[in-house]
Structure formats: structure tokens, C-alpha cells
View 1 (cartoon, rainbow, N blue to C red):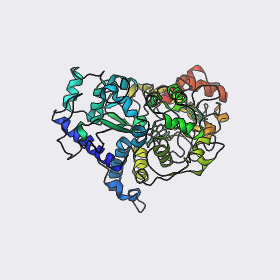
View 2: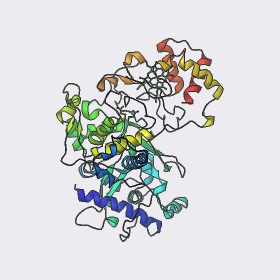
View 3: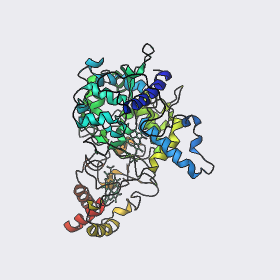
View 4: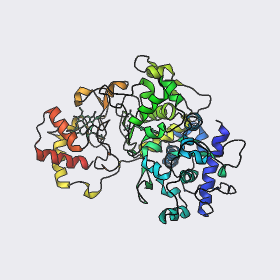
Length: 479
Ligand code: HEC
Ligand code: HEC
């Protein structure tokens, strides 16, 4: 994998998007490679040139407010489109792009049609589609059962969180019409969804929203060559596939590659729900278990050790052979590649995420007068506010608790540095359709807010009446 390839990739993406406007582009067919890049047809800010400023953007000395818009734009670009060079892994190493292409298009197996991709929870950005394609989707002339259509969508950079790399071989310098040669993933894969404005799974991007439809495990399991995972975990590929397919939608295991724990003691998969990446301003510790570090710690952790981007990552705690045998073996706590495609992007990426607010509940999401009663309970008798301190709904300070304190098992907590759970900064609890699909708590063990409230009522022996529980739930839905 070379630098040349990734540079060529970005020009393809924009070239094809620009081309689509003129409707010269057709699904399944080759693209005319004539168009050159003049701008970004999607109207998204470009951050590529400014990232070479090696972190100056992180700004210490009195960053002017004028700079913040540029930082947000740059961070958004990274969050949505930057692969950090991870195509070396997802394409070149495990060859996931071949499974997407299918044998008919030069890959392997049946391929992934748009219908199958939507089924796997992948999302399509309607703003990346030229009018001709939108029309084709409306009048049914676009074949959603043909993997070639998925390739066409990838050429348009319309699949949220996935970048297809086309025609990047030195032998075939005409990338726009060339075959898919590799692929990479972005933060947006797991932490963005769409508003379904066009059709289910097709709409405008919602950055920071957990994609609880996304079946990461099933997608990765489709890759023809899982030997890299097998080698890392010291198991065979069939076992890797079994683990990946056990996760189900909305879940991922961000610690497996360090501690090698695929299963909980009760035999269920160790994967956790994908959390949202908005509403984090003012929150100290991150992820379900916390104690890793701040948002920027986690961004580096994910970009380098989970997405397999090319970047520096250092945390000697992860070299502990007892606690993190797999990570220690692979030296994942001290990654120092020759070329670093992550570090310079961390300042703006952090800034962007902290700028994402949690979505407000629609007016009809809860009963306002009962929520008022519920708020008093939350802050008083029900004891919720001792940990979920409003308005950030987590503790200012050390926002972690032992499993005993919240009355659950400690399996997931023990996989993290401090062995605790992070007080969830309650976010958009009203939305069970997308954001909290899959339930509440790190593993979705409580299907509904009523289940959560009953659990706390028993655990804290607060003896709430049915009416009080119902009022408390109305308040939770207003958060
Ligand atoms: C394959 C899916 C996946 C990808 C890709 C991914 N994440 Fe995550 N993210 C997760 C999961 C799962 C967690 C929870 C991990 C845990 O608690 O162990 C998480 C946690 C987080 C958190 C903590 C949220 C909180 O509530 O404190 C942030 C912030 C975050 N991710 C940002 C990012 C960024 C930025 C990127 C890109 C560099 C990224 N993620 C890529 C799955 C993903
Ligand atoms: C001792 C501190 C503590 C108290 C008191 C507490 N919580 Fe929590 N809460 C937590 C922690 C820690 C988590 C994360 C659990 C996990 O990761 O599985 C959490 C998670 C939650 C969640 C799940 C959020 C999500 O996105 O999945 C809800 C809802 C919630 N709490 C509501 C409440 C309510 C209502 C009360 C009062 C009845 C309450 N909590 C009292 C610490 C506390």
C-alpha cells in the first residue's frame, strides 16, 4: 500500500461526484474518466491541506474564535472521510473489498448488493448522490440487488463510513473506470447514521449518532482473509468468524484485540453497544468503562489499534501481560509507524466531537408535567442525581463507579484500566428508534427505561410507587 494510492483515491472520489451532476454517470457501467477535480461536489469542507500544519491547529496561545469554524470543518472532514491509511488493513490485508465486489466484479463470493448493505446496517448519504441517481432510485431503475450498484455508490463516496479505492494500481492509471482495489473505514461507520429522509437507511448524515443497526461483526466476517485476526488472537479463522458473527447489530468489541476475551463468563459475546459520540462536552472519562483517557486518547486508540490506521499510539498500561496478553504480545501499547497519518488530525477531531450537541427531544416525546414530577424524584428520592449530575448527567470529576455500586456484574469494567463503569452522561434517552435501539447499559441488558428504573429501585431500595416510576421515566425521556 502506498501513499500514491491514497492520493489518487481522493481525486477519484471528488472527480466522480462532480461527474455525477452532469448525469453522464450510470450505475453498473464504467465511468468516463475525463472529469478532473475542481471542487467538492458535496459542498463539504476540505481539510487535507491544513492538516499538514502538524498540530498548530490545536492552538495554545489564545485561539481566536474565527479559527473554531475551521477546526470544526477540519474535524468533520476527518470524522467523515479520513481512513488514516487503514486501507492497508481492510483492503490490502483482509481483502474486505473483494467480498463487497463479488466474483462477478472481480472479487469473491456473491458480493454485497445495496439491499444487503442496508440490511447489514450500512447507510447511504443522500447528499452525495447526483440528481440522476436520486431519480433512478425513485423510479426503480437503479438495481438495489446488484453488487455493481454498491460499487457505484462507493465511487460516489455515498456509503457512510466506507471509502472504496478504485483503480489504484500502477498498471491501471485510469482510476475512475478501474476496479475496486482496496477500501478503508472511517469513524462515521460506527458513529454516524442518516435521518432516513429518502428511504430507510438513505438520508442526510447525522454525525455522532451511534449506528445501532450496523452489524460490524457480520461485515468483517465476510472478508476472505481473516488470518491477520487469527494470528493476533492465536486462534483459527473459523473461530474469528464465529466470534465476529456472535456480536449482532449495534455492537463492537473494542477491547478484544488487547485482552482476547471474546466471551463473558455467562457465555454471551463480550461486545458492547456502540455509544454515541455527541454530548460529551464537559464529560471527564470516556467509553462505557472510562479511565482510558479523554476523547482524544480514545480517538488515537481507535484510529490506530481498532481501525488499523497508520499512526502513533502509546499507553504502557496496555503492555501489561496479565491484563492485556494479546495487546502486550503485539506491542499494541507502543505503536510507532514510519509515517503518522493520525496524530496531526487529533486536535480538530477532538474539537469536532466536543462540538456535537446531543439532539433535543421532540415536543411529543414526553409528558411535560409528569416529567416535572419525575425531575424532583431524579434529584431526590430516586437518588439518580448523586451520580448523574445535571445538566451534564455524569459527575464533574472522577465519574467512575464499581460494578457493586450500580448492582451489576464487573466483567466489562475489569477489562478497563480502573476496573469501573463510567456514569453514562445520559443522552437522548427518548430515542429508542435509533440511538438506544438495542437497549440500555453497556451491553443493552435493560431493554427499556422501565427495566432500568426497576433495577435501580431494587438495588437502591428506594421503593418507588408505580406512579413515581412512570414519572421518573417521563423525565428521563426529556433528557
Ligand atoms: C467499529 C466501530 C467503531 C469505529 C469505527 C469507531 N468507534 Fe468509537 N466507539 C465504538 C465502541 C464500541 C465504543 C465503546 C467502547 C467501550 O466502551 O469499550 C466507542 C467509543 C467511542 C467514544 C466514547 C464515547 C463516550 O460515550 O464517551 C468516542 C468519543 C468515540 N468512540 C469516537 C470515535 C472516533 C473519533 C472514531 C474514529 C477515529 C471512532 N470512534 C471509531 C465503536 C467504534
Ligand atoms: C452510583 C452511581 C449511579 C447512580 C446513583 C445512578 N446511576 Fe445510572 N448509571 C451509572 C453508571 C455507572 C451507568 C453505566 C452502566 C453501564 O455502562 O452498563 C449508568 C447508566 C444509566 C443509564 C443507561 C444509559 C444508556 O445510555 O444506556 C440510565 C438510563 C441511567 N443510568 C439512569 C439512572 C437513573 C434513572 C438513576 C436513578 C434511579 C440512576 N441512573 C442512578 C451510575 C449511576
